[in-house]
Length: 144
View (tube, rainbow, N blue to C red):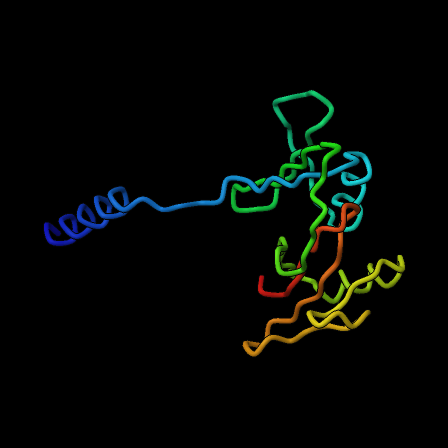
């Protein structure tokens, strides 16, 4: 019993000693908050959470694991948008998500850019890419 308590104490000490990094939030610069909110709520089905600013230019969404997506409206949105720089969300039911995209004629493509196609990575994870109202790329995959 003493050995078990000693091991538990060492593990607890180690857990508290070695800090872990956790994603708190991701901020995305948007040009039209209402249009972006419509996209993130209707296409991705994200749930809006309370945001402290209450200034009409912020919206916050729960993206799981204690992390949030912050949309921040500004008129000077970046002009260079590349698929290499993207947000990635994993979904349990990617097939259902793709069906929803198809039923609403929302465009998606694979990594090379072929419309309506799905990329399968070497590790078997399937992924598609969509763009939000400001043209930012989002990868959606089934690595849930």
